[in-house]
Amino acid sequence: MRAAIINTVIGTGSVGRIACGTADELLAHGDEVLLCRGRGDAVPGYDNYRIGSDPDMYAHGVLSRITDRHGLYSRGATKALLKRLEEYKPDIIQLHNVHGYYLSYPMLFEWLKGYGCPVVWTLHDCWAFTGHCVHYEYRGCTKWKDAGCGSCPESREYPASYICDNSSANYRRKKESFTGVRGMHLVTPSVWLRSQVGMSMLSEYPVDVINTGIDLETFRHTDSDIRERYGIGDRVLILGVANPWRERKGMFDMAKLAMRLDPEKYVIAMIGLKKGQMHLLPPHIIKTGHTDSVRELAEWYSTADIYVNLTCEDTLPTANIEALACGTPVITYRAGGSPETVDAAGDKEPVTGLVTERNDIPAVISAIEYFGHKEAKVSEACRAQALRFDKKDKFREYYELYQKI
Figure 1: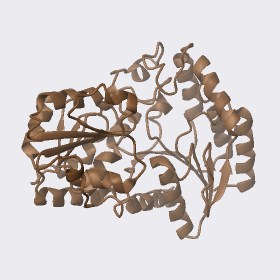
Figure 2: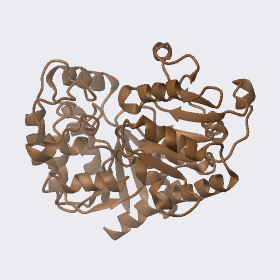
Figure 3: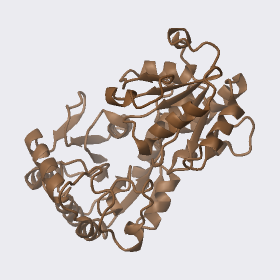
Figure 4: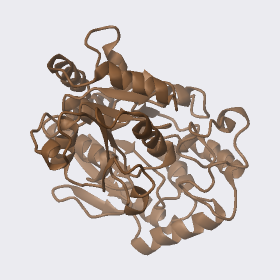
């Protein structure tokens, strides 16, 4: 089998790592892989292809911010990509994010319809079936489903447009481009996103759920001196991690928690804050910036008694799974695919997580009081839950899907 994998980046970020992981699975079976990226460095050991250039990407971004026509520029870069694909002659094409200021999606999909090989498109967000946004749950917007978008309430969110609103035309153009691709199969990381696809313009396609996996060799219980270093003592440590922190990611709900919990019994730590955000939060919260160290994250996850994720929108937050893998139970809002990381525990004891309604701070406090200090049997159950998300198994599921179609 000869496969081509297309994404904004390769080798970095959760989606870029999926691209490399599935490539490794293909190569291990003796297949060929071409990794096509919109930006970033080439990954040694693979057949790499850079789509376009940095100036082209910057121009695409600037024009998108003015016109709200994201994904309609980079025509020269897309033409060169299609020429490379014609030379390579792939038997299957794996698409990930086709947004990100590096492709002309109408040109790509017109070519796919003519080329005719099987296509797997993994949707990591909702952009493919809306007129603008990548997520709409925070706003509670259903225009993508009811009337086809227009007057977008998320126009200033990624992919941001500060002057024009072309969401209505974008919706029609996407529907024209993305429907009618013979042999296309969709993948979503969560059951929630699959349900959204089923109500969208893309409902004609079969959809498989393949969860985003994590590295269980990296995210496991890791000893540290965090309690001593930060003076936490024997208080219950409640951890939150985001990149970036924003209101819709629960930043101010974490502040509300801190104001209501007894600081003699509980302490909150927030990882990933920008310097300008730290002064907005109560002084007794432990505040740290973004870290690229997975070991440091594993230390925080392992030290925490409870991981709290108060996001109002997400496809499938891997931070929940990383915390579970380190033996820490999760409290999360009922938002997107977040509950799916803990729901599999069902009625079994001990539970690995609790789900509350969005912005229900009293319910979150009750859940925190339920867990209290982390118990050994809870940590064991959390680690067992995380086994469902082993990245090696997920890459294998992708390969099995390629074989099937």
